Image (cartoon, rainbow over all chains, first blue to last red; front, side):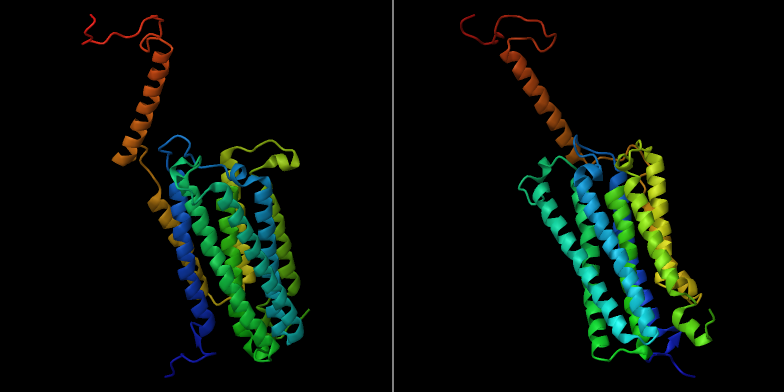
Length: 209
Length: 156
């Protein structure tokens, strides 16, 4: 009887690495589920004090702010497509093309982080989040708390994804990842698409609802 | 276009154009999502809150399923992975239902109550004070044209 523990071995008919990534993502998705459920619970709550009702995102961020984030969503969706091209090119043995797609994916992730950083600094300045008398804010503090925790946790995932993709890019460039190692590319892809998937939900719940 | 078994294993039975169609679908759905809460962007009247919430959550779920099924290859994956991937969805549904504030008369912590009362009392006092300043009786708002008498005033 053989025990499937080595790299490239399979459990449940799936590659061990891939299964491991899926199980990690399940755990991660549950953390996001906790954040989103907490957000939903706080949003349902009746306001206790005047002026602390949940703000309308379009009024808080402004149409321009929402459109900037929509552009960010567009970048992330595009970087998901480029990641899929990395996998299909590696599977077809076109490593040079895969390198280029991988570089575009990394740039997409960095662009997303840059825009989010700009948004955070901009909003923190406007919200007086670090003000000495936060109770004087004209909107619910829960809004700021859930917004920053959700987008911050997601932003950390994007940052890790960029690092993951950079390792992948270097591997492709140095010839360490080829057609035979496409499972590694697929695992990196699954992580990156998960980041995109979570952003779809965060964008809808925090910015649009 | 025919594919060998090995090709199918590598490509998960999917062709490149499928990825691009999913990308187009994601972009179109995102544009629709942006318009729904602010229909004035294309000159429409505002939708009701119910329609906005249900359609936005519906579109978000469709996008999520598209990404998970096609980009994360769940559609061509071994059946064992699918229940594992669905676990967080079930978890989030249970969590949301469990956290739902069913009771309308949710117990408000005492410290918040005090804050509310204090705020109201201060506002009331301010109002009374401003009325007194104008020499008006706060009780019935009739002008008295005299200062209120003090009980232990030595002059009287």
